[in-house]
Image 1 (cartoon, rainbow, N blue to C red):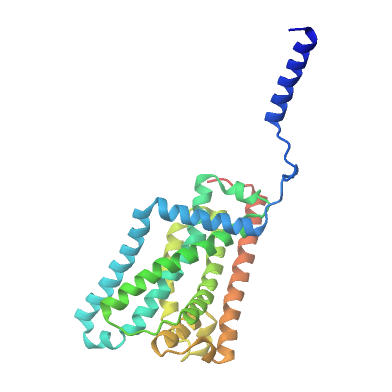
Image 2 (cartoon, rainbow, N blue to C red):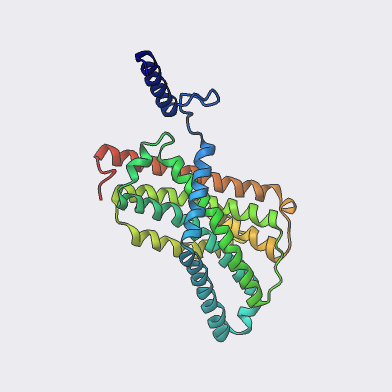
Length: 290
C-alpha cells in the first residue's frame, strides 16, 4: 500500500467516525424545542398512569379503604337508625361519592407539596421553565382524573350494595362534580403554600378533610349564604342531578353561574395564597429547608 493510499484510508476512517458520531439529518433541528404546557400536561398524566399501574396494591388499597368506611357507615347506620337511614341512602351515596373526589383533589396538592419539601425536590419545580404553581396545578388536575376513575368504581359498588336507583348522566355528573372539586383545588393550593412556609402541618391538613363532610352535607338551597362555601352548592346540585334526575341544561342559569363563580373564585384565592406563601419562603431562605 502506497502512502497516498494509506492517507486515503485514514481520511476515510476519520470520515466514517465523524459521520457516525454526528449523522447528518436534515429533518432534525439543531436547536432544542422549548417545552409547552401541552408537554407538561402529557408528562404529568403519564406519571400518574405509571404510578397507578406500577403500584397496583396501593391503588386497590385506596378503593378498599373507601368501601370499608362506606360499609361501616351504611351497615352500622342501618343497625342504629334503621328505616330512617334507608330513606336517605341516595343522598348518603351521592355525598360520599363527592367526598371521595374532594379528598383526592385536596390531598393531591397539599400532601404532594409537603412531600416535595421532605424529598428536597421542591427547587426543581421552582426552577423549571413553567414555575412551581403550574406544575402543582397540572399534578392536581391529573390526580382528579385518576380519582374520578377510582371514585366511579366506588360509586358502582355502593349502588349495587345499597340497591339505589341513581340517575347517572355522565355529562351532568362530570361537569358538576368537576366544578365542585375545583374549589377544593383552591383550598389545596392555599394549604400547600402554608406547608412550604411552615413545613410540618400534616395534622391540620388532615383535619380539613373531615371539614369536607360538613360542606358536602350543608343545606345550600335552604340557607342561601352557604352556597358561597366550597362544595356546598355543588353538592346540592349533584344531589338533584343524581337523585331527582335533573340534567345539566335543566338547572337555572343562576345556579350554574354560581357554581362556576365559586369554583373560579376559590381557585384564584388559593393561587394567590400559594404565591404569597412561596414568595415569603424564598425571601426568608427557607424554601428548601425541612
